[in-house]
Each structure stands twice: as C-alpha cells, then as structure tokens.
Length: 378
Image (tube, rainbow, N blue to C red; front, side, top):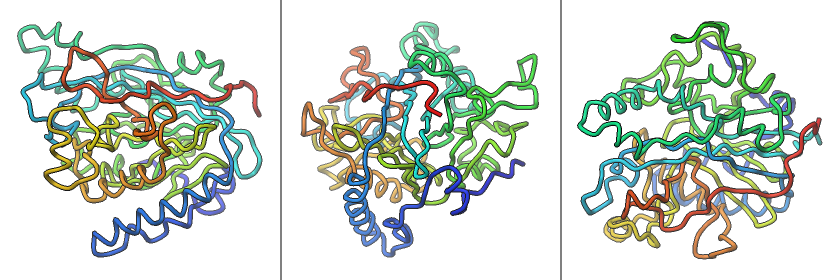
C-alpha cells in the first residue's frame, strides 16, 4: 500500500500552498439545508479575497480524447426523449502557470488523462466489450470514440518539456491510472518494462480521501477506478491535502465532495475573471439547467426546484455533490461573450456533435487560453 506524503501545514509551505480558512467546518454544518447555506456564504466570502490576491501567469487547455458515457448518468436521468444511449465526453488537459506563495514560478498540469490507462477501468472495459458484441459495434465505437493526442504530446504542443512540470492533479481518480503518469517500478500487465514517469519529477496533488479510496475500494466504487493503479508507484510522488487549498495567487484546489469523497475542483483567476473546472457536470447545462435546451433538463430544474442537475454516474453523496456545484457556481464569473452563462469549464465536456442531437450542450466555451505558457520558468 502506498503511504502518501501528508500535506500538513509545513508540507503545504514546502509546495508553496496554504489552506483556505473560509471553508473550515462548512461540511459539518447540520441540518443539510443549513449546510448548503453555509457553503454558499463561505464561497461568497472567499471569492472576494481570492480575486483580490491576483491572477495566474497563463493557462492553456488541449483536447486529449473523446470517450463514451451513458446519457442517463450525464443528466441524472433528466433527458425526456428517446435517444441513443451514449454520448461522448471530451477530456481536456489544462496547463496552468502561476507563482506560489513562496514566490516560486510553478507549472501545474490538470487532467493529464492517458487513454490506455482509462480503458482499463472496469466500467470502460465492460462497456467496450458490450459495444463490440452488438451488431454494428465497430460503427458505434467510431461514433463515440476519438483520440486527439497524449498528455506528453499535449505538453510539447504548448511548448513545455517534462522537466517544466512541478505538479499534476485530477479532480478525482475515476478511470485514472497513476502509474501511467507517475511511473512504476513494476511492469504493468501487457507492457515489457517498468513505466517511466511522464512528467519527470512532478508530484501528484490529491485529496487524502481520494487516494485512500483507491487504496481500499468499496464494491460500489470498484467499476470506476483502476484497481492496482498504485502498484510500484513511489509514495513520494504524492502530496495529499485535506479540505480546500490555494496554491498561489489566482489558483486554488477546492474540495467539492459528493461525486467522490475526495473530489476537488480547479479555481483560476484570469484577465476575464474567475473560472472553475470540474466534472460535477459535463456541460454548462448541469450547472444552469434553467437555461438548458436539452429536452427534460429544464423540466428537471422546474419539477424538483433544483438549481443544478448533477453528473450522476456515482452518487456517493448526492447532497454533497449538489452543495459542491453551488459552491462552484457561486465562485465562477459570468462569461464575457454571453453573460447568461458562467465561466465553468467541465474537465470532461459533452461533445457538441450533431450526431447526438438533441443531447448537445446549449453553450460551449471550447477550452481556455490566457497569457503565454513559458518553458524554463524555474
């Protein structure tokens, strides 16, 4: 079992980070209606301080791959018309450069998904076998699967090398294989030699509850994680944290539990204001169902009086996930191109492909880019 480096206050200082006190205790508030109120109030208070602290240096997203996903999961069974049962979600790797609280220039890679690793998660391996068995399975695969690049090539595309990366992180570890990113002293089945680290000496920032989940899976979680994904990984490659932390001016990792126990979201302050990246939803329709044109999603909002429509493949705690999405909505600024919509970029986003009509996103940001990514900052 991997024994991760625990991000105590002293360890946070070493990586140039610090805890966010505004959210202390909000997830313990009872009853649940009062907890939602506390989350919203804490997010409102933190936003004022967060925006006053400054902005990141630069950010650039790169599309990695599109993979299939059940429509029923995507919108909590809200879609009200017969559709093809699968849609596609596009994973985007986001490269962020910022100055930490020690004044050190840093590079963070968010969501560096390796498609070959994700394919080994039981949910996707079982889904692919099902697709292969149905008539026209090859055509179905072509409809829902598309590969654009790999994380190392995406890094090169923005002008960086592996040695430029300080940290990597995922909002949660569903369908992620840490061995593919951090390297392993063991040979992964089907390969011929131990895996080298993808990003040199970079460490993975991960919420302590999320890493603990991968270390000891519950049967209700098993299908979504790559069992054995920690085998042979150097424990010093992990830096775990609890709660909410800010990495530097203009960048924070917010604990947003519910989708998983250790889910966290990326918060960025840019020249156009605050952005959030998360997989609590797969399109802006999830966070703003009142504006959605996907059949049934707005009705879900109206029928149940819910201001969000969660991405609901796992309901480890649906109330927590709801609160977390409200936390994200409260922090995100309106979009400059269309102020009706918030600057929330799903970390895996519903593909805007006509082949899945009418289950297409009502509004799409299409990635994020500010400033100039630079090599050799350190």
